[in-house]
Image 1 (cartoon, rainbow, N blue to C red):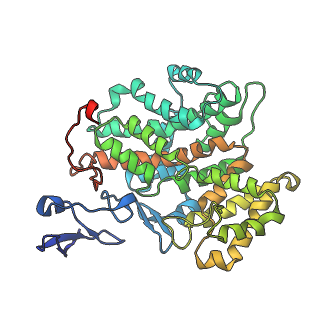
Image 2 (image 1 turned 45 degrees about the horizontal axis):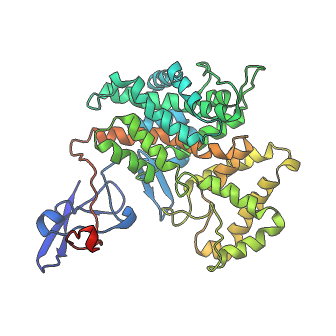
Image 3 (image 1 turned 90 degrees about the vertical axis):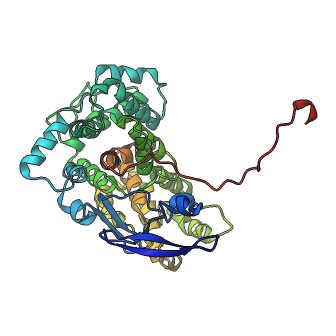
Length: 430
């Protein structure tokens, strides 16, 4: 890293030089680590919109240019040529695998998909209508009770075992949560199926009859998992890093990330898209609702358009759009009014000057929810699907954070605005 200096005039009038750090690509970063020690002041940045919380070599985003890269590889190339398992290896290990490395890695994932029977019994303690994300978070947290002998964060082998277990077992946990909601028996994983085929099997198969894997559905899931695999220091990933920085076991850190993802402002966006489409109801109502979205005094918002990071277009949306249309073309058009509505809304927004001027293009959430619905996955499972893809990103960031020799426990500061010192008043005198 090359360094320069940023000159700052502090509140007391003294001049201070702050180091400027330069990464491989992207904006330079002003290092304010010693600002409080030397000047007695904090920086203030609600939501951390201008603050780099760590140094990472996993994912790079350029929101202005619509760029997303995993370990330097553009997501467009990975989506077109790779698989989720290969991308998982890339994120965890830093480089694309050789044939033998990929075979060994994929074999490890396939052979570790089963859950301890005690974990399956855990599901029986939940209500039949428990939200799948509540179950996912709780069961992942419980993994530390089953695998406590291999949670030494200082041991590289234990870090690998943890990452492989999370990646392998999370689809089994997710499918078990779905089966509980539907009242169907749990379906055990099959080692002869690939990652997405196996998940579809566990999700939709029943003991009474054979289940035929839909290869297009498996292809669509694989693509969605690639596009969701990592997204730099988002809310859930930062949560995993913060929880893990205390030395908490990695399963607890991932459970914390799942809980953060459950928030409607983060992982629930694609669910909000479906609710919006249901509210619009019919193609004939699109103009009315587009006008409402333009009206600043109206509370209605078009969900799935625009992005906090991407100021131009979401590169993932460009990729997933074709898959969305491929899935929809397989359906009986008479039974898909919601999908017809989504496609018409997409076309209206892409041609409307208001949306073009404000760069409000459809994002990945607009299309992912439509695909999940088309595959027969219920809305309550949408955020779970997001978690399945993001699990490898969380594990990669935890591994990077825990192995950083310069790492410290996360401890943000604050701007205190409460009362100044007050003296206690006896209750009879208040």
